[in-house]
Amino acid sequence: MLTITEVSRSYQVSTRMLRYYEQQGLIASLRIPDYAYRVYDEENIARLRLILLLRRLRVPLKAIAAILSSNDAEQAVRILQEKIAEIDAEQHTLSTIRETLALFVQRIGLADADRRLTLLEDEALLSAVNALQLSNTTLKERTLMTELQTADNARWKILNVRHVLLPETTVAAFHFIGPDPEQHVDAMAAAFVRNSGLYAAKPDARMFGFNHPNPAPDREHYGYEVWVTIPEGMDVPAPGVKKIMPGGLYAAHTIDFPNFHEWQWLLDWAMNSPSYEPAGSGSPEDMFGSLEEHLNWVHNAHYGSAADVPVRVDLLLPVRKRGK
Image (cartoon, rainbow, N blue to C red):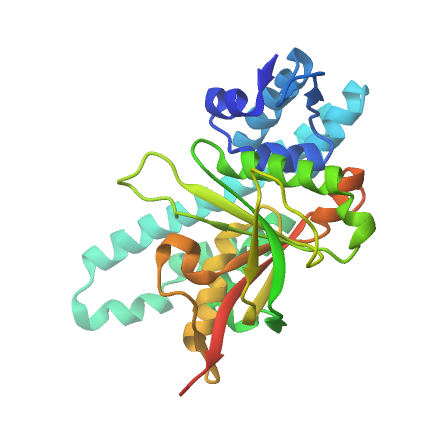
């Protein structure tokens, strides 16, 4: 049996990703009586090793889930054969691109500067380019072209950003600095939710988290802090601390867990917005006052995660009107 921290270190996978695999039903952890941490048995460690291997081979999670959930060897073979076919098509496309570029190199080397634009009339080059266009027929390649075009337009331009006013409210705060801080504060906050009966007392309770302090090259560990909204009169036993969340105006963007790289897209949106600009604490130690709201977390902490509900997070960036 290995704890989530031991598995994370042994297989170089974040604890966030391990929890995501659990929420998707790909692996499962066990709770041992009178033991504080959930653990993984040999079967689930073997499943994880297969997941990581197939991910390195660029097999999507949906296909991996189908392989793990079926005892039908033919289905697994069919899924992997489809992946091989995609790679074959991609390899053919890359080979055509390489040959075309080599032909360009050859022609450019033989032409002087004034004649290089006439290379567009070269029949051999045009034939190679046309072959490339004809080979670009797989769904994966069309998706790649769409992604490239979207990148050219800048992701932040197409974000569906909402403006959210969070009120000042009372929260139970949990904080930990050390290895896997998200796991530690998640366990502390979840125990508080269950022991206090928070969901029954406040079914609209919300959970917000943020790095505190941020990861940095000069420190061994970073921290994570969680705020769970509570009724004003509710007691918060240690290790929790009762605090007031100040609230304010935020730009909000919803992500599918664990796509936290989209923080940069939201920041780019704010930097380029004609009406709003980033605000916040001014300190990187608390993510400049930004928050990550884990949607449905309080419900799941009380009842357990709902397998058919996507795991989503609202990224909340403090903003203010420009000129203020």
